[in-house]
Length: 295
Image (cartoon, rainbow, N blue to C red; front, side, top):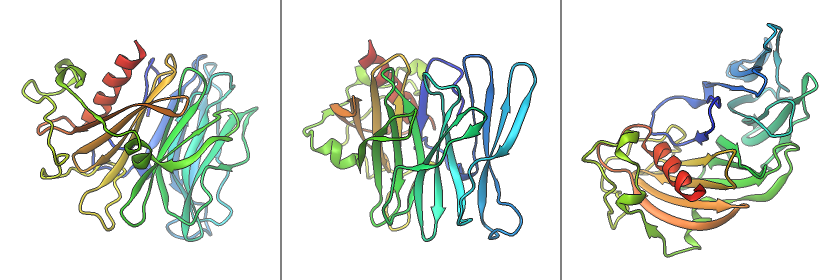
């Protein structure tokens, strides 16, 4: 994920079938310093499948720093990195999935003073918490979504302080958070993705009473498919000049979308991914919604 531009649009459910666990992520701060984080095989002596996160910092004067980010003491594996630019910080924050024992936790650290801070955890429950994605709004509130991969699968949402890693609101099931605000608004064509943003001219949002589940599902990149007929993924979209955020649950072709402010649901929408939509359709839809709500 690159954050050179005004938009910080982060997606855990872009309709692509790629292994995000081995992604390389990068941000560029205001003075032009480039931070890159990669997933690499763990050091010699670790378990064969163990992974770690390495970082490279390239400053405008040509200086380079390279190292390993707080390796897991159990040697289980670090993956799914997300880098965030944080207002008021001398370096970015990092969120990732860390395997410890039989489960996976969502971890946080921030680069400051030439080192990465002690690891903080957003989760402390016996679940597989995977594929985090996050961003920071104009008020400095961080939003993070991830997939909890057990049973029927769930998308979790939490808000946090990106400077410290402290939780503002504890993790909760995003789907349940949204449906408490029923009935939803169905997205009308005027709220759909403009055709100029990549949606085929003939492909406007089509409201389907069954949520579009009769159409073949394209697995989200972070899809959990263990015991499901339809994959589950999550999306969050933010911009640093707006105090609102948009987050969505994607199950197959069906979408449940919430507009948040200060971590609270303000609007609740239902929609579907139309036939013929581009792979980045969900990203574009959330960007379009966020633009409208931030005007």
